[in-house]
Image 1 (cartoon, one colour):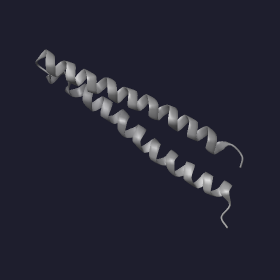
Image 2 (cartoon, one colour):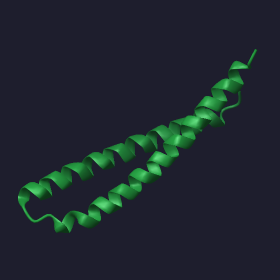
Image 3 (spheres, one colour):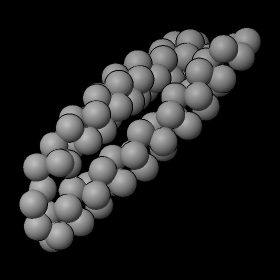
Image 4 (cartoon, one colour):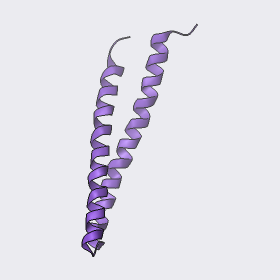
Length: 78
C-alpha cells in the first residue's frame, strides 16, 4: 500500500512544478504582447490586443496565487 501522505506530496509537487512553468510562460507572454501593441493600427486591433493582454495578466495573477497556495501546502509537515 502506498502512503497517502507521500502520494499527496508527489501529486501537489508535480502540480506546483507545472504551475510554476505556466506562470513563467504567461509572464513571458505578457511582455511579448506588450511588444507588439504599438503595431496595432486600428482601434479594433488595439482593443483586441488590449483584451488579450488583460486576459493574460489575469491568467498570470491566478497562476501566481495557485503557485503560492501550492508552495504553502507543500511546505507543511506531512
